[in-house]
Length: 278
Image (spheres, rainbow, N blue to C red):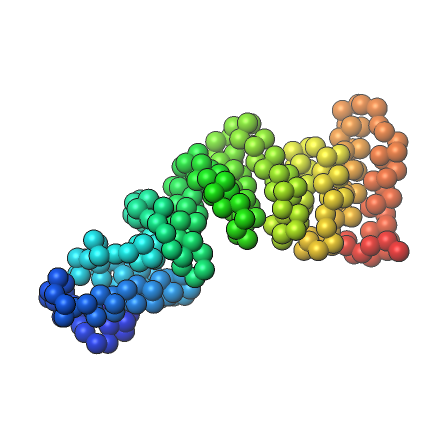
């Protein structure tokens, strides 16, 4: 309750509740109400110890004011974010569907874009992965020029990862691995795209596809935060492939074996993973 009164210094909650919302006198209160939503949203999204209390204050504000019909797209989006932060996913989904095609921007981002992103995230938290992926795909189609698109593509990958883990379906797992490669190839100039070669290599290595993993590590950009370990990981992948073949009694490619040993020995003798050969 303390946050509630903090945002409403001009009127108490009781006075706002008793106000005649249809009168001109209360037009300033509506503006104040909208400002309160924005402030509460900032507290909620800050992740501080007051976030949940702020969300409860916001929900109570709606109940006391009975203003559901007076909310504009920006306010509904703010409330949806509040519900999402409070893990009230069905409530968030309902609001987001109402503003999914709304015009305008919030903090420079189209409301329609932000609403879809939050909707996709809400579905993911609800374990409705197919619905989530459909919305992610729609974002990628409708907003191809947005600077946030690489981030959306990465979130789509993590959604597929969770879907594969929880469903244990091979075809979903394959979609996840392919999505990582697609991210790396499609957005090479972005941070997400540069790091995707590392994620892709790790996914391949964990699945025993060592040669492909080695190739993925080799394509990592020097600008990637994971580049420092690329040489070591490539050598490890090659060596794991060599060991796996030998364990299965298969003929070992001597060149692959020597290359893997060279990579690993260089790292061990010349320095920590990440040093480049001179």
